Image 1 (cartoon, rainbow, N blue to C red):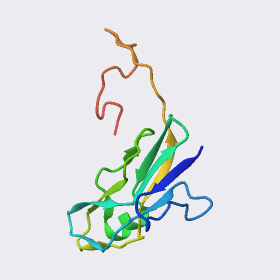
Image 2 (cartoon, rainbow, N blue to C red):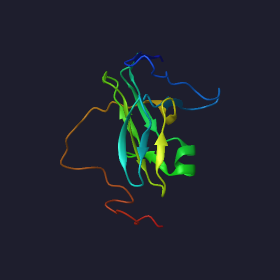
Image 3 (cartoon, rainbow, N blue to C red):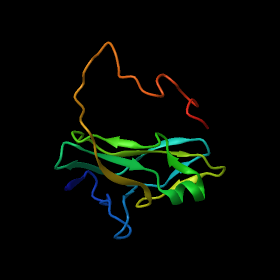
Amino acid sequence: MKITFKKLDEKAVIPERATAGSAGLDISACLDSPVVLEPGEIKMIPTGLAAQTDCNDVAMLIYPRSGLSTKHGVSLANCVGVVDSDYRGAWFIPLINHGKQPFTVEHGMRIAQLVPTRVLIPEIEISESLDDTERGKGGFGSSGE
């Protein structure tokens, strides 16, 4: 599988793994000037990138970086971002500051991580009934705590 990145801004940083065993490729902010995230604030941070994969059954999933989350309370506003295989637009990372102090995002700062993931493309069928199971319609908490 191959990901092709396009720099939309000459100072954009191409995502890469921090170590050979890293699951994710670090995504960096592409900024003209620092951006301050006040506690509770959400801002869309540009990456200066667009990308494509060579497979239609791959989504590029964007996850928070554990260091930013645990040390500063900065995470993704949407928990996990999904870049569909046919999207070719600019990438922005929606950061939220859950911390108690303002947090400054600088150009080139690693702000998220990209994990390409195969997805199942289901065939959709409509039916008046579904198979019975032991659980049945048991909802939240029905299988124990």
